[in-house]
Structures are given as structure tokens and as C-alpha cells.
Length: 165
Image (cartoon, rainbow, N blue to C red; front, side, top):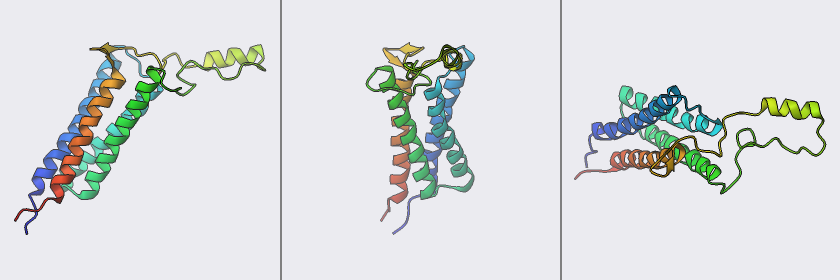
């Protein structure tokens, strides 16, 4: 039996990495337009950045199953972080207090400490979407598009395991 061409798997992996690069470019574009990212928005960028690096490694060295698995994990993390962010926006669960407006327990806080907490609180909130398109926030669009990238990475792995007669 002969293994399928690795150029086919390389193409899918590089395409998935290009998708992550496009999502990062979109995030930076919106940031340049004045939409400052919250803490969770920044967190969602890291797996995409990792996927881009993995895609560059695939392009340079050829497809390796390990690269495909790492790319798949990066896309899954990007999707999970985005879903978490959507949940915070929809109040399905609490987000980090640093970006969801919480100042912690105020019952035994001095005035000076309260002022310090207010001054240290982030202005960019994770629980309030700053941009919505077709009823979906940026985090929701990231979740959807990241899930598509999970499928593309999975396809590259599946194609790498196929054998032709």
C-alpha cells in the first residue's frame, strides 16, 4: 500500500493556519478601528498565533502527524476560549473579575483600598460585546470560525492517515 501525497495534507494544514492568520488579522484590524480587546479577547489570540507558527512549520518541513495534532489542539483551544467568552457575554457563567466589572468583596474594604481597586479595574469589559454582526458578537464569530478550523485540521490529520491501494 502507498501513502497519499503529503502535499495534500500540507495544503489542508497550511489552509487551517492561514485561517488562524486571517482571524488574527481581523482582530488587529478591529483594534486599529478603536475596538480595544478585553482580557478574554487577548486570550483567544494565543491559540491562533500558535496555529500560525505550526502552519509555518508544516510549510517549511512538510506535514508531520505531530504538527497536525498540535494544530488541532490549538484550534480546539481557540474554539473553547471563544465559547467561554460567549458564555460570559451571555451571562451563562461568570467571567474573570478583572474584566467582568467585579471589584471583589467590598464588605471590609477601606476607602483608600476601594479607590485603588477602582483605579486598577480594567475599562474593557469581557461581559459586554463591543461589536455585533448578524446578532453575533466577535467572540461568537470567533467560536464559529475556530470550529471550522478544527474541522480543517482534523481533515488534514484524516488525510494523512489514509492509504491508497
